[in-house]
Image (tube, rainbow, N blue to C red; front, side):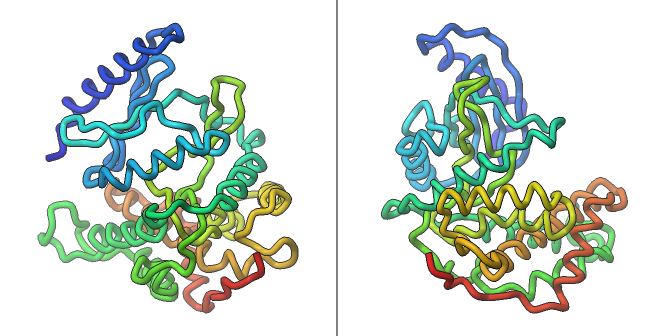
Length: 326
């Protein structure tokens, strides 16, 4: 049973406080809720962060992902404890606090650091028994939510919209052009490469805070899979005109310079990036439309841009090549 928010957040805060005060470093005793969403609740007390993972998270899979983070402290932020604990029916993990990327300073976004960390992660063999990377599953979940929110007949679901939404059609058409593995309907063509699964700038922190090196956070989607998925969000933003060409060029160059295997060392990267970038564009558009419908508002400029990109994509078959030399 998922606990009510008024139970979970105080319990998380208490756990973070207890952990912070059990550590030798002085605790400044500041507490805050950093995130409270259906897919995760995060609270901070001093230099300690407690995270309640999504309902239904498997303890064995989460434990194996925590082990990867603990084993690669120069790439991933290591957890404070090796296994999750159960708190009000939710799995909870404890972490040191790291300074996040400043959303108000886009010019200082650490694209090169993100790319270098990804390349190092992708060059690390996935340990035996690690679950698959969850990127395609999350994209499929976004499509399921879109269908539920925008296409259900009135009265069939209390959370459904009052009828179809015009932006849903191009998003679903673009989804249907993707290969089965990108829709989580078949195994991924790579099952040996270690992937993050949900790379964006919110997944980087400096640790030790405030001036330590950048590290990747959030192991919920970590697993074995297609490494180009981790490059797909910035690639999709660039293709949609939402990421400046210079930032994309720096990101791609840093990834290649660090020996990242997801794209060829030189030449055109798009045969490897096209399918994942399309999938992330569809996922972003599906979430945007569902949120806009739930809020009863029109799409904003950025949301309309990703929907328009889906409309263009649906008329052009994706490039399916994934076999460049590594």
